[in-house]
Length: 510
Ligand code: NAD
Image (cartoon, rainbow, N blue to C red; front, side):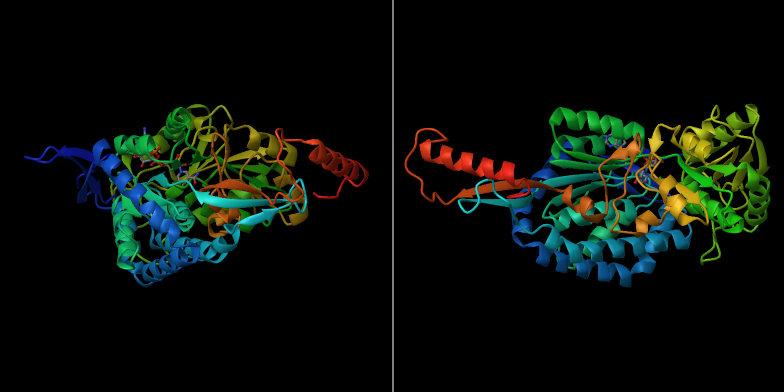
């Protein structure tokens, strides 16, 4: 079996064009190749998208919503094809791929329903009542560029693309070089339901194509590593274009002593092992109060033996393959570093070549501390490092001792106390007694603080980032006469009366 570490770049014989070979991580076999889109081609795609944007915007939000609805219905009908496409290039379980379809279905319906209201022009309170009218319009940026990772090829692209399109932008999508086929398939479905080709274009390629997209577009939405995000932010700053960044995480889970320990132990595995740990919001470190530490470790050992690692279909397969040798090697390096510094592996820790080239056992580590990479750097693998803490306060302090701040979770039977503790954690979201559901809760904004990113996807915030407000102030010239300065004698007196009134009744005209 050939193991391809990362997509191989090849030059097609005779034609001066580079291609990337895409590999099925489960078999190690090539499943096809996609061209590397050149900067000139990216420029041409941008110009087509720019030309198409006015007509797309003029359609109106409801008409755009109808087209998106037709597309998402088709996606739902053809879900088995999409699930297979995701699994073929990514190696995940059927359930994880299904979740991508489910989340995107929700996202589409949420924005189709809420966007017309959220984007409606508004009238705001004016400074000079009766005479002035204050109006607000939301205008799309123009052409938005999306650069996305490989771990959720459908979800991570379309969760952001959909609100941008509904808001009236046209879009360029540069999917990960590891997983381009899902996007190519899904965009064809958009064309099938009548969405014009220039409204949404997929540009395959590697980081060079991504960088070329950043050079052209009016807005960049990036999902990927903090390292790449920083480079994109620097270039976007030079171009003075707005961006949103969904970056890496090192999400803590806190187990309080009043937690249901069976639920916490099994929940910790679900949180750490979904998609083989290759999730930005993966549970990557666990802090357990001393009073329940031994019990928790005993129960997690019990449950981890029941985790079904495999290649098969169905809901009973809990964990699939990892996606690249690069991720697997980092996982092993984090284990080695932790063990060298005194940690113990109490379950797993080995590759499973009998299942496929990139399978790795769910791995539980104890006796870990913050000197170890496994507690500080994003692993993106199926590791569960568990640390004993004295109390909730220490747990919160350690949870916040990180350069990341994406998601977090707390297990406790006292939901009120847990909610209060949640607000002390420096992260974009916190889950109580569960994990990951932020992705399925479209009404809530999702995103990071610190090095986990900036900007929010989902919720009204995830739509409004793709529009810029334009204020329009209308003066009906009531009682006006020609004047040579902003404040003539009459206006000056009116303004003084208004300000006096406001001093007397501060809430008036707010
Ligand atoms: P990556 O940063 O290596 O690549 C992401 C994308 O950026 C790819 O499409 C890649 O081709 C492109 N790219 C690479 N160099 C570029 C450059 N110089 N300019 C423009 N584009 C460039 O990340 P990855 O390995 O694909 O994804 C894993 C990372 O993504 C993890 O850190 C994970 O936490 C993060 N992630 C975050 C979220 C979130 O919502 N916060 C979601 C999923 C993944």
